[in-house]
Image (cartoon, rainbow over all chains, first blue to last red; front, side):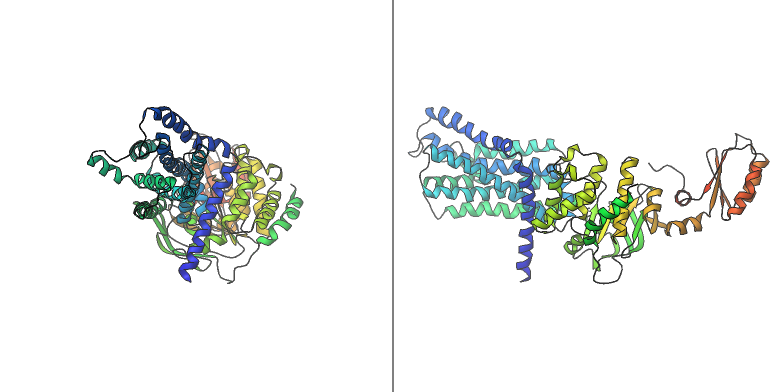
Length: 260
Length: 328
């Protein structure tokens, strides 16, 4: 009963932090959505349809149908990575929002969880938009593709926890350039979003499998194609494992920075 | 002063804030409390209690350890050494319980700039698990009490410093705290805004809210606090009621005079002889008297010298105890 009520308290606390973020977001949701949604849309048209005309079909799929689930995964990544870096850093430093919240019955762990959950919610929103586009454009036709949304949520949690850990260590906004160039952009370009890993030199394939987004792309692509395979659970497990490592790290680092 | 308004305005709003802790003991008990940041000792073994219904003040210059001490009480700074119990719970444990029963007005403005005035209050109330209806009702009442009702939908950016401080106070009251902690509640406010905050704090005090405040304004300490701890460099230099401290450390009256350069004539000599204690700072001489009649008796002998004859104040105590050097 004890641990159960502790979990309930923890869920309540983080959902209250999530609600705070939602309240502050809903008034300028339109502006924020443009940022989240324009990028996958533009990329899908420019690269998928534009450049895709020059590309051979991949595994019987048109290039744009190959690209779209990859973009869904990368959109999920970027949405929560942005939220838990620039957004969370502002709340941690300039606005003093974290300080104000942890002086209430909410704990540091719940603040961190609430912000990561909020980032993951934005991931689902962005992924949902890409999925809707895929349906409209006929790039997917299976109900299994709805499974990409919970997967996008897991991707959001993982990159949220990673982003939050980085935020706890960042001395200023300028340091997010490293995170986005060296982590997020590398994942975006080399996790199999834009090209299949099959046929690459083995060292390149090995390197790609070290990137957590690669595992998410495999799962999301399979769901969009409606082709399930028990081995996908291993990939889901890897995403969960990264999250399970990064989340306590994020909490620990934020606590160390906040509570002297 | 619209003091009657305060009474009326306060009565309804504040009544529910009066909440007696189950036990009759002090709300805060600190014993040998200390804190070190890196290698710097900022709180150096202090003892104090906060009794129910009182307003206790921490008076001290910058760097006295005031903010660190209240941050340890509000579980925002880890306990360094010694023991600290809040509402009967040690601060190392039961932090959620302690924080649920505290209201804190921090020195830094950390209102939520992404939310409206009203939004700041209702979102804050949710952190305490208040129901939606209760939050809205309480937020409206508190905006009324703190004269912010017409700013209900305003953006935080568009509030003056005084309004922000009042909103921070309203926010701290959302949860009906048993103990209200205020860290320099009027620092940086203009005199009008400061007086409004004092008025509200006095109304809360009358309604029975226990308060712990830090300040470096003597006037604030004298007006609001029942008891004071004078802190410097992490240590308690003196404690007592404002009048008691003045009586004990200074006496009753002060004659400040400005003798011309090198012109320490018979007038000054008779002043120095009559005073119980004399201090010099720059070109000024302060003569302190325990007995007002002695001070009055010396006045006719001061001749042409420029002087000011006044009652002893807390500022005299403060400067006596903490010295006159700049704290920078």
